[in-house]
Length: 626
Image (cartoon, rainbow, N blue to C red; front, side):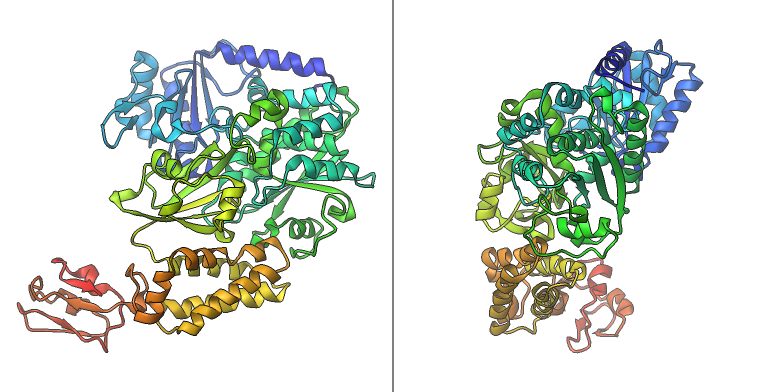
């Protein structure tokens, strides 16, 4: 139990010495992506192999005997999820990719016993063939700057001493013993930190409002309800550096005068829930959470609230309602939560990534933070890079970096040499950007001017063979299903928009339907109650703005230029390529194909249900669509 500042400093010194004694640290990624690919089996294989060879190792700092020169730990997400399971060797920084448990004996033999990296498991440059051993030299990582994610992949998320050995809770110590609440708020204000959950509101201003609000009881809420399709930024932070989130919440609590906080995390994140609960328990046992923390007089407690998975609970007033035991539905603002939030008390709500930036800012100063990013959007932003990009995963880049750098330098361009068409940024409430936006700076203001938004950080790369009308329909389907139904513009407007989009993809829409879709999108944007409803039309509005020709082709010509919308396709057989094998006819479920053996076959367009089976079964590429 740490009862004073000196106790924390002494533990940090012991943990730091234990860390330095490690001649080799093996870090097996235990983020959700790598776990799904078998990384925990790889971890156990290392334990078994080290024991079989009688090589001493430890799995925890300080608590284990300190004479073992090798440490074996799990870690949080490294970001390069497509290449998992990942294993990192410190202090060299060597990163092994796609490691299976069967590879472990070779790694132990070659790397540990003979100091020879196993080349076949290292990164191979797809163009030059160059073998890259160190993680930082892999192109995926070279343009990244990690602040929120800096400890993910470097520390054991289930070992509080490992976090402390890497500087953990020193920002809290500085806050409690060297700064007043007003000085903490000033530092955050001067850093320019803006909310990373989507709105981009200045964090320091939100804290200042809550501090000055009347009321003895105040709360801090961490919004970990990450519901965007393809987004996993907050999940990775909660899984990989849970103590960084707790530390940020405690600093926020000290700044606004709160003694209690909630982490609202969706139940679909079981690994994040497990590690957050352990982090809270370990911090309480260490005296870093609870009453009179480190003898400072400051008390703070944290509760974990598991959400049921409603997308709307990412909206702060709906989230508050859910914590209070009510149905998760937004309410009109003002009053804002900073004045009247949880149970009517002043409440600060920050998302996970925002809070993960707090401790580094307090430790290193606002000036250090502002050296990254742009004047209007300082710092870095995490993005979940997904879709048809070559290297999918989690990235953290300085604000102001261009879309081109993220997609082509970090992401490696599109798979299979496909041409870039668009990127959907900001999740279902974001917008689609095109090739003309590749050199657009990724910051709050630039994206807003282009009709998109950073949002929580989802980034889906779309290739040439995708239909943008279908992309808009996909996101509208998600938004409509997740609408809480409280306000008419969102409840009914998104439903009618989805009906119109479906009508367009089926070739049944008219010019009037296209105009009605645009008009309806603007009505929903202006009239919806909450921020989620107001931004729901963004995918439609941006695709109409930048890909109107595709909409018009669907409506006027009854054609899908990308060949995606099934009901607008017609199937034909090329007489030159057809060998008359009859395979297509035998597999057609409606007997729409006819022809003599060894003679070209034909498809009856009246009978054809456009299932695509004939194209799939043809061995000669004779079936085509138009």
